[in-house]
Length: 249
Length: 264
Image 1 (cartoon, rainbow over the protein chains, first blue to last red):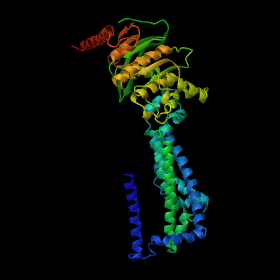
Image 2 (image 1 turned 60 degrees about the vertical axis):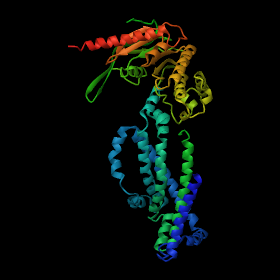
Image 3 (image 1 turned 90 degrees about the horizontal axis):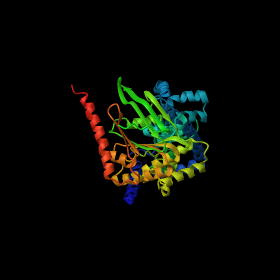
Image 4 (image 1 turned 180 degrees about the horizontal axis):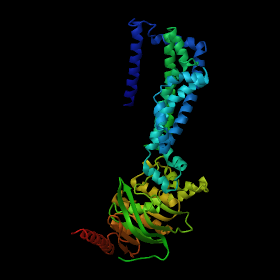
């Protein structure tokens, strides 16, 4: 079963790469429109040797991690507060409805005006996307906590908001909050590209430079770079999640 | 109906009524209920579902507010806590291991160190015979084991009075009888005052010193019977069966009388 699963997923990936290789090589489309996989190692080595690759990865990781931390932290705080206290939820309901539909990218002009073409502008744009996902996940998870567990906390004297939060609400909501954080983990990489379109240096801005020069092989190198970075992060997250969720059968 | 007024009641309930409003309609759950429970006494509260038995426990725990009446609780000064409640479902916290579940209530007292809490939780776990399962997760336990952990969690806070809300009703017969005997032993060893809610009259008669039958809507006391048979009692003993029959007769006679009121 497990072997069959590994075999099939390897075959699927191989078939994908093969088709990708054949389409430009058989001149079905021009190589400048779609670079073949076999051309990528050379493009990667060029970028790597010049030191640009490493620099861009570090810059983007910096934006990504700080933006994610801000968005996730504030998302959890506001999600938990609105989930616990109906008054806060009511007070913020229309503020949320007003701000929520604004695309990340629409904040770019303000980000530049407020923070300049600087790391802080990218962090700001990334954190907004993360914030909404985590906010709604945390709010829903807190709201969904079994009332009987809250009654249990009451019965043993944990009746104040902070006591309920620490003893029952937060642990019970953790699985739901983690789902939100994992969704945001992927969403934030998309936001990195969007944020760096505004000119802040990183993977995204380098991709834009390359694409304007039709250096599509470089564009693909950075697409794959992002996929690999995301893959490692998601795998690490799943590992941490399974450690944290050992109490689940 | 015998009127029994213990000299030094641990719980004294006078004229307790409770009603709640929903969609503009008032529902009376309890009406003018009087009940005294002596220190160290084991009282079983029986009655069909919806008669307000669980509501009474919630009032005692201050999880529900009475509409009228007085509740006085005089805890044993030697006990750490006045009251602890064992729920019908074990209601363990799934993210805590067994020992941490037992220690849950102890975390309220911030004066105790982690090590002290651990010692007391282990002692409570030992009292219910589960000390070797201390490191398990709740999902790894059987129904009976969960209910034992739940009992240990209540015992760990060293309550003066133990309130139990149909704690064995969801268990299979063998497990239930086993836990009933364990409860009798624990009561003997700890001397706790126990108020035990059940809809099973045979269970009530087997366990308690006194059985209080609630009936009607809103619920009121229909019958009080003292069971003076010594422990260990024999299951299905003639004497116990007779008392159980008498309580059932009390309840149905009262029910019939209540129905007759409506005959025009």
